[in-house]
Each structure stands twice: as structure tokens, then as C-alpha cells.
Image (cartoon, rainbow, N blue to C red; front, side, top):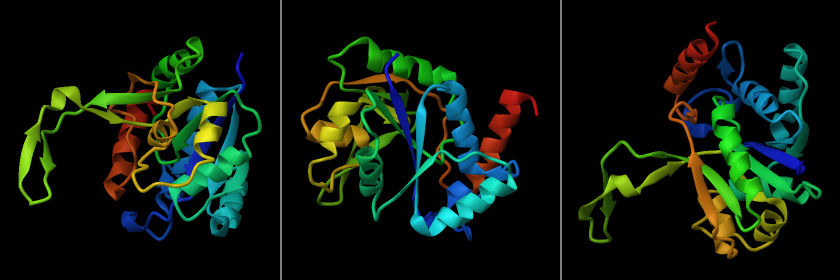
Length: 230
């Protein structure tokens, strides 16, 4: 079996969330969101190595939370000023993992339904550079032009991408060795800029929500209750 490292990005400040703590440390069913995310990944990828990227200013808080909840932390790496820098810091320390997954700490609803097709896609064909889960877009979309006018887009040809995103480890390390560019929006865009453009889409889930606003916590709690019956 290929060696796997999962990088969990939890270094964001969460200023837009409007809470005293970054959203990854806010309570979800009585524990920090990121703990639910880590447990879900451990369940789906029990043999994988996990690397948690956090702001160095939050490390003491995180370790205190782990002690309070009797929770075992993954290996910790310090994040940088941007998401790109945070992922790069973790990749530098990812050793020689054959497959690297990058996941948002604030997506706690990850499951086997997403992980299994993702891992199958990235491991079954050596020509595949990366695999990312995606879902159909349900909202109507428009492109805003430079003059301020807009035009509609056929949403049937669009997909909203999620995490975790999976990549061949050696190729992702090479991609992140190149300089930063403003157009990087996710790890797949970093790969494509380095010439690794064979990125396949796998089935995501609308339940795989990214906690962005305080109301998303309540939605996640409902989804967890539906999933577990608790």
C-alpha cells in the first residue's frame, strides 16, 4: 500500500467568522471542530500519517484542548502568513510520502464515501497527478466583466471543488518548490501551474460543508446527528 500523509490545514485566523477563537477551534458538539475533522480522517484512513498545520500562537491552546478532551494530537507543523505557505511548510516535512492529501480543518463531515473514490483515482493510474472531490453547482452563475456588466454561465458545466485533494507526493513537492502566484486558490491550481494538469474529479458530497459562518456549526451538528443518530 502506498504511504499516505494527510495535511490538515488549521492555521487560519478565522477573522470573518466573528468568534473569539478561529473557527477550527470553536465548539462542535462540545469539542473543537478540528477534532471532529481529525477523527473522521483517522476513521477513513487509519494507516495514514496526519500532519496538523496550526498558527504557532495557537499551539499552546491546542495542546491544552487536547489535554482537556483526552485527545491525541497529530504531528504539528507551524503555518505561515498564507494558506500556500502553510501547506508548503507541511510538505517540506512530509518526508517521502507517495500520496499527499490536503484537507481543510473546517470540513469535519468527511467520510468514506468521499475518501474511497478519491484514493482509488489517485492510486490506480500513475499518469494521474491529482484527484479532487467535486459537486454540481446548484446556484445560477454569472461572470462579471471589467466594465461592470455580467453574463450568465451554464452551471451544468461547472463544479464546486472540495477537500481533501489528493496528489502524487513527488509531484506536489515539486509544485510547491516553485514561487507563489496570486491565482493559486487551492492545491490543484498550484499543481497545474507546475505543469501537472492531469487532475481528475471524483464524487464529493453536499454534506461535506466548509464551516465558514457561525450558522454552519448548527448545520454540521444536524448532519452529525443524522449520520450517527446521536
